[in-house]
Length: 622
Image (cartoon, rainbow, N blue to C red):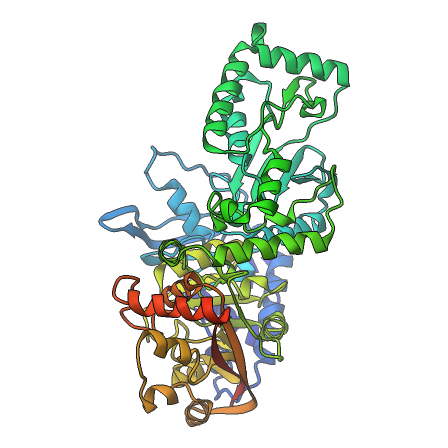
């Protein structure tokens, strides 16, 4: 055949395959379906021929006509729609974008430009219609397709839900990408971008970080502050600033410049007014905000030669940490736990080192002071805390649970790294899957709770993962045999026939399930006595029988009973809100007396003890 003026030598099988792909726009074709349509014989579980012929066909087409590849149209949408209630910023949009052309989106605010870009990059899910990238034939962008595009929508996709520990992971990722360490002070460390034009300042705990970012934003026109690319207030009181890279200034020049800013001299009068106004706001809000910091190192030079003021605000560390040591009861009542979770993780690059044993003593004092706050305060705090997603960082220092010895996170990472098409069921906010270094070539997840689904889109979308927001109990959004791996950590209610249907013959299921009588000591303390049927629920014997009846072969089964300890009643409230099926209808108002009784037990015994059960199942589709 001829393609764009070039001869392409295709075998009869490759030609039939090409006809099938071109005749199936917007469809997800499973390998069994491709095999039966092209080879015209029943699929028996060997898909090597499909993989080989698809790869060969793509290679021939690209080599013969790199400028026109019918399997690689850049972008095509059919009746693409995104609704928010009654408003549809993207409404039945059908477009086709060709290679080697430049397109622009022009429209007023609210016209749908950002919504369209988020749909294309899988940061949002269409209400209806389909999107095809590079002629893939899939109705949604696949992992492999998304890795070939780059988007920067309004601001980089960094998430305020990141903890300081996840920040350290970000730090490692940046260094892996060529960012290098370029400094550390008492409160933060800094990294330089590979091209030396940008710096990232990361602080695990920084009460004044938002005021510094506010200065950079409000004084941008004055020109004597760093150019701010991004500021994010992160979970646990951490802070991230990304700005232009700056160079050092001599002490005399720096001191003279700071004095002029402080005194409002000449052309620096406008900057001085902004500095003082924001400083007054910081001192009114933060009891430990010190005077303007006259340290000469807080004046630096931009690449264009201008002098800039950085970090003029600071927390009085000796006073702040002195109160934490000497009067922890007062301290914990001043800074909420959610804003000081990583108080002991600052680098102390100038005043340190800070011995780990001293950090641990301070953590223990604050944890004990937190637990001894009045029950009503603990309950009220937990009643309003965020419980979206499947992260449990809020319980750090307030509850513990033993972990099974099989290490599900490691097993999951190994499994998805070797998979072609994988589905993670009930993914929550993607917290567990998001920790995997490598994902399947085509990675999908499902989630039925809208807030969790949005967290998953934010966390996993930039990695090319396709998030399916499904209704509880709905069929898997795949054709029969489309996946070679199905995974789940704590599935809500495994639909074994659907799992078997979605797996290709020989495909595997890997999951860690919640077992029977998990946390029943706590459930009965708050809800009351349970029935034998309730205690029998989620039993591994029953789940294994159901899986085998659906056509799965059990390859591995392991069980564990694990100790749980809750150190304050706030942790009890939070976990019952996080897992609402434990005590249906739970609220701090309807169950107040039970919560106060649990609080009395904790203050008497030091902890409320319960036990959870888990079982690991690995199965194969026959």
